[in-house]
Amino acid sequence: MAGIKMATPAAKPEEYKNVFVFLETREDKLVRPALEMIGVGKRIADKVGEKLYCLLLGGNIKDEAKEAVSYGCDIVLGAESPDLSVYRTLPYSKIISDFVKEEKPNIFLIPATRNGRDLASRIAVSCEAGVTADCTELDIEQDTRILSANRPTYGESMLAEILCKKHRPQMATARAGIFPVPDRVKSPKGEIRINSVKVDKSLLKKEVLEFKKKNAVDLTAAKVVVSGGMGLGKADGFKLIEELASEIGGVVGSTRPAADMGWISRDHQVGQTGQTVRPRLYVAAGISGKIQHIMGMKNSETIIAINTDPNAEIIKYSDYVINADLYEAIPALVNSIREEKKKLAPAAGK
Amino acid sequence: MVLEIIVMVKQVPDSQEVVIDPVTMNLNRSLTRNVTNSADENALEAALRIKDKVGANVTVISMGPPQAETTMIECLARGADRAILASDRFFGGADTYPTGLTIAATISKIGKFDIIFAGEESSDSSTGHVGPGVAEFLNIDQITYASSVDYEDGYVTADRELEGGTETVRVPTPVLVTVLLNSNSPRMQTLRRKIDAVKKGMEVWDHDKIGLQPEWVGVRGSPTIVRKMRPIKERERAAKKIDVAGLGDLARELYEKKILKLEEE
Ligand SMILES: Cc1cc2nc3c(=O)[nH]c(=O)nc-3n(C[C@H](O)[C@H](O)[C@H](O)COP(=O)(O)OP(=O)(O)OC[C@H]3O[C@@H](n4cnc5c(N)ncnc54)[C@H](O)[C@@H]3O)c2cc1C
Ligand SMILES: Nc1ncnc2c1ncn2[C@@H]1O[C@H](COP(=O)(O)O)[C@@H](O)[C@H]1O
Image 1 (cartoon, rainbow over the protein chains, first blue to last red):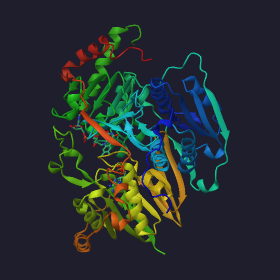
Image 2: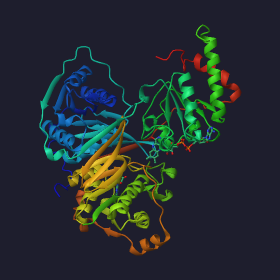
Image 3: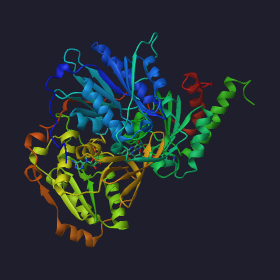
Image 4: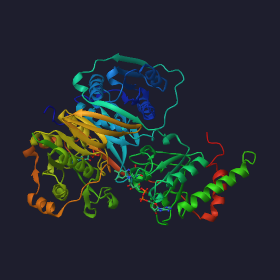
């Protein structure tokens, strides 16, 4: 077995410069967390006067490279091959590790998505780097160029600040939905370096047989989210959730066990292992407020809880609490909202 | 030749009753009960189903303090054949790098393996990094976030749940698979097996037995350090009580305060 050895500290940490970010794609299109990485990477690079490098791999990535530049990327390092059109662990980690060993970045950020985490740890081991997972705050100390990587811990009750002083690069994965998508820059002038690469056959043994797309609901961009939990009691309960959501222009969310039950598809799940949302209004119906759910919605501007339990944990995170059976409260709320709409826009009402 | 399956399991503090010491800001371990990381129970179940189907030797391994014995015995009682605990005072305080290193070295020491299972993440560290790290150390392919796993004739086929959909992949062994929490229902321990498990017991391997230098592992072998911990302060919310009769007022307030708008953009 090759390579089971300790992580050797960087001999000359001062030689490591610039910020790398990995741009995740799906069907050769940048996903939203990739844009979030450009934003946070740019802020960190600017603070120490260094450059932001964006790593882009895929089958046909020229347009997306221009996209990355338009968001403020200084240099796009690209690798293009039909063999890279879907993410696979081995070719991606090999090519990216080679980029890292060649360019010696000080910092490397990867979105903490599923494929991002699949990748990050392999690169950290291969490059003998330190990596902090799932950060919600990232900053750099100007004089030392040390990354301050902050991640929630102990059930989100504490924030741990984690440093990597001697190993390079300093790697972190960043939780999706936390860092804002940056504005486009006015006169973008990044450089694009894309190489056509030939991928070693030994790295391509994994076959991707199928990808079943979910009619992906992007909860992260929603202004209003109405979520249901186990308190619904049955799959049918989500009809009620949908009714309220459509009445107030919202999208439907869920807790993990509700998705585990098959009451609704997994892409509606909010929380630690689902999506992180911060809408203007979040309605939590039949949701107890366990920390893994809370962490996905606690930054919503206004939160309404509907729960029969007057002591449910969700209450302390809520602006409004409707202590009632949701099967009674939601239809009544829908009615009240209809009435209110009629008053506000009588012409639009029937 | 019989299939060799390894399952990585971790003992974690019960997340329902985590107690933080207000002075040190660390976990108060004496007040917290320890349990087997839930996703690792799903990983073991995935392994045992392959054992049921084609026959296999299932070895559970863990790195942790001696009290992880309860977890190891529990895994034997569910149907694992062998349990190895990598335990040594030098292993303490490890971040994901030396954790992966210690587990990978333990697996190499065991010898042959076809499939390695791990959980999607541990409830206390929740990095999901240890599994892929082990795969990199061992230079093998991996399938992460699997919701279903099947083995046939030297290939593992699995569904991976990703943000945008479900990906089906097929990989020749050896391969490491990380299994989603709740992706199956772990079987119960039987009484007979429990008695056998206690009789059989676990093996404990230290750094010397595994062939690791003390400075490679634990806190000394960790590239990252925790500089400080601070409590996360949540915004105070009013938790204003509304009864069903008051929903009309609530609807008015939501529009007045522009929490709801007539036209959502
Ligand atoms: C590693 C890990 C990751 C996890 N990730 C996530 C995640 O991403 N997202 C997530 O949501 N969970 C996650 N969980 C699960 C989490 O711990 C909780 O189990 C889950 O959030 C609880 O879901 P719930 O509120 O729907 O169900 P329950 O906790 O069962 O709560 C149901 C609530 O409904 C109320 N209720 C019952 N009947 C009614 C009624 N008729 N009207 C009104 N209220 C009613 C009850 O009072 C109760 O408060 C994770 C757990 C682990 C271990
Ligand atoms: N100390 C450990 N001993 C054995 N397995 C571990 C250990 N730490 C992590 N794992 C495995 O790696 C998975 C991911 O853990 P983590 O990277 O800590 O989120 C867990 O579900 C376990 O299967």
